[in-house]
Picture 1 (cartoon, rainbow, N blue to C red):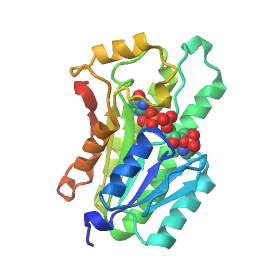
Picture 2: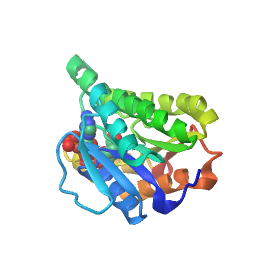
Picture 3: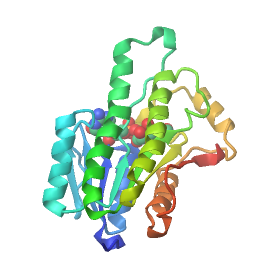
Picture 4: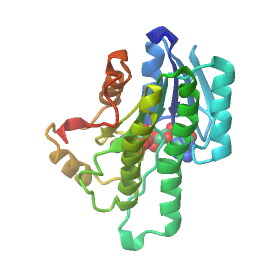
Length: 236
Ligand SMILES: NC(=O)c1ccc[n+]([C@@H]2O[C@H](COP(=O)([O-])OP(=O)(O)OC[C@H]3O[C@@H](n4cnc5c(N)ncnc54)[C@H](OP(=O)(O)O)[C@@H]3O)[C@@H](O)[C@H]2O)c1
């Protein structure tokens, strides 16, 4: 099957704002058809972009999203599991409901989209899945136990799914993101962000373009021998 930049069909979760929105704009500039989603509606209006109000932790809604992609486009080339939430708290002060909420979006949401997306990709025996991780995992950041554990699970999912999907010519990789100025880290104290940046080889905040750059590498046709990998940004 052909895999040309101007014919790409890309699903990106969490495109209402932040990194996901930048990624949607990035792929639109590449000439791709982008199907984005978030729980709330978006104000992003562009040719080639369609938005679905979907909670990625809701199995029924995720099934409907991918069914609509198949009906409308008959293919799925790239899936980027970007939707994510965070909470900062000491373990002793963290309610079980927070654990459930964060794992529901970050892990279950990623799992459901991978499963439904890969079922479509499998039909064309081609696909690229990119998950979003965080430096909070290798840095073992205190106060981020639940968030980091949910993203650890995403990395394990990436590694095992890469093996399960390799026979279908579907690669599964992840980007380990450093702090990027979005609403997600708005409430994190500046001293904490400074300490995280101090722990990186390259001492600056990340940018959405840094994330897009790694994704561009993963989705290249020539990257079909790269799977199960996590590329951490900033020299983590
Ligand atoms: N910013 C950072 O410093 C940083 C660092 C490392 C990793 N990351 C990761 O990067 C990804 C994007 O984060 P961000 O910084 O761009 O966050 P953000 O600005 O808070 O944006 C999160 C996006 O995800 C959507 N979303 C949240 N829960 C959802 C759900 N259950 N179903 C569907 N959509 C949902 C939000 O839209 P709605 O509210 O409308 O649903 C929003 O569009 C996340 O996976 C995050 O863990 C970010």
